[in-house]
Amino acid sequence: MEKRVALFPGSFDPFTKGHYDIVERGLKLFDEIIIAIGYNSSKQTRYFAIDEMVESINGSFTNEPRVSVITYSELTATLAQRLGARYLLRGLRNTTDFEYENSVSQVNRYLYPELETVFLITSPSYAAINSTIIREVHKYGGDVSEFLPYPLKK
Ligand code: ADP
Image (tube, rainbow, N blue to C red; front, side, top):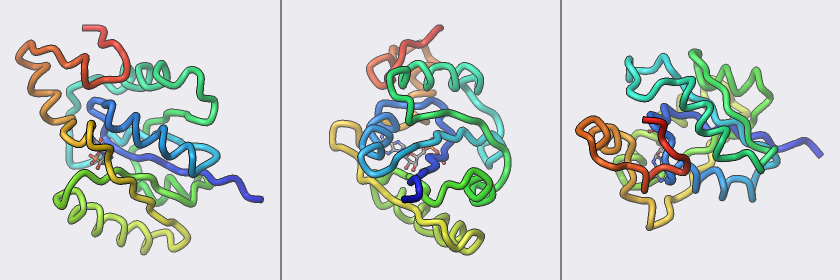
């Protein structure tokens, strides 16, 4: 049987416990998950350095050989096709996520018709975790370690 490979694309600025939860649960559905950090989206500049984020995410999954991390700056659908990933994994927290994800997934399927986006509803304990808020808190010196599945260097 064909290996079920899912791409989990995102900005991951930073990768949070909410993202971690989606990956862990995704592993029950897929043989392999590729976490893909996009760096050429509308979010132009990153707050957390991309190389450090790759290292931190890898460090969170050292015991999980089915998870890998890459960076990309092309269309997500093109990347998925190139990697032989027929599934996109995304998390849904609320109706705002839904509105956005709905149109993105339509476009992705238009670009690569075999591509199915699979949505996992966030676990209640992680529903409030939001990368934007974590960046704000961190910027002003607040402790964000509780929201991240790895220790921050600075
Ligand atoms: P993007 O800029 O592509 O939205 P993000 O890094 O913000 O990238 O999010 C990547 C994916 O993870 C999205 O599908 C988003 O809805 C989901 N996600 C973000 N935070 C959480 C969370 N706390 N629980 C579940 N899913 C989440």
